[in-house]
Length: 604
Image (cartoon, rainbow, N blue to C red; front, side, top):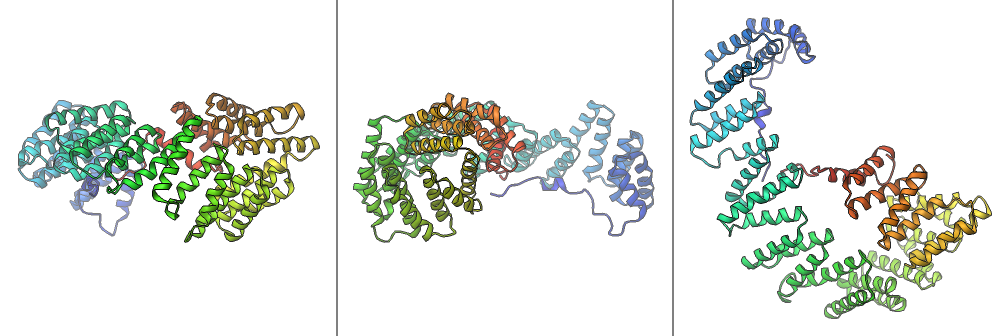
């Protein structure tokens, strides 16, 4: 449904000025626009009296108001009202004079009399409401429309006009009530209502107003589907996913649906890390049987969500093995084929990085590569996966061969640039810093901004730590620790990082060590330790290589882990202001606006 607004509010009350404007008109408008109303008023008076052109009325009348010539303004408005009794502009302007004179009661009586004398005519009612709006008398604009409903005996008349006014005034209780009235007769307006309410609400209290209004309605009409859907939306906005799921399950059962709304909700919950609820919703879909259209997607998403859930915490060995079994059950049921390639890749990743089953993971991917009809892009991605696993098992030559194949097959493409970066990093792991830096310098102009940024950072790390033998030796230890982190041997990596300053005092790797420790602590879910390392970089060397990375990572932790929104916003703002060339600026700006409560999509 298209957005309906008070378009007429924006229109000038009369016809446009003549195409040919004389010098007096130009001078008068210049004075008016610059706020020199004392000079503008006499010129407009002369022009109006000479031509009786109503185009001069509005600037003339407003100049009189601004210069407090109330008697002249009232005489002007009343004389024109006498000649144009159906033109609300002059009627409302008389009330404006009373307001300017601080005669509030008189103005109220006058405006109310205009509303009371409205004809039973939809156009006239809207015309008066628009005129009130133009005069900044918003409450009377609303009053005219509400009274007009009764006058023409149409409860749903002027709905979109009132919605626009309530939203403009941020009258949230009335906006909510108006949308509830609209949805009761036009359920298809639900997406519009959600966007409008979401962009207007500013805090939890606003959402509580909505919840109370919905529950009051459902007490009278408990079977109303659209109100139940709006209540579900409320629960999602408040991240009350248990309640959202209960509500959605009830709707699915009551309406005997196929599970579409459950499936869509599961994706929302998974994206918000509400894994338990997402898993429950998918298990519900699976119980509908293999003939249900969401049976296969639910099975597929279930293992992916379980995988994401375990990656978000310190998973036990038992949980990892259970997930491995889930993948094998899935692949046994649906077969190892192109359509289940994603599951084979995820299973291989789980086995290689978390269960230490390098050989089995390698076999999984080699079997996948031998399947017929695989797309070229997928073959390249699987080869990169396999190359990484060969690094884990120490078969570095095999890794280099696979990365080289992908680089050649996807020359000048993002996947080829990723392969080139992996080969450069492999050389860095092995201590071949000069060759690695030469490849990284080529990648600084990569089409993928992420690859280009990673290449630049690693190149700068190498170049800044090769000036002395002490620094070079320290860098080699650091690269070894980085390789251990890649292999997820975090304890060993931390021990090696701690040894660098002891073995090579005065080295230039302090910030690099702090950043790598941060990544390890985040991987270990040791959030306090990660914050400590990031704060160290920010306090000591914010203008150096890792300054903007440290700010963004710390802001992300405050936003997602510790829920300290104010601190996160402060850091995102600092990135925007102090690091305009940073790769993180765009996302920092988006996250800042989201935390501030901006509505990204203003259409409704």
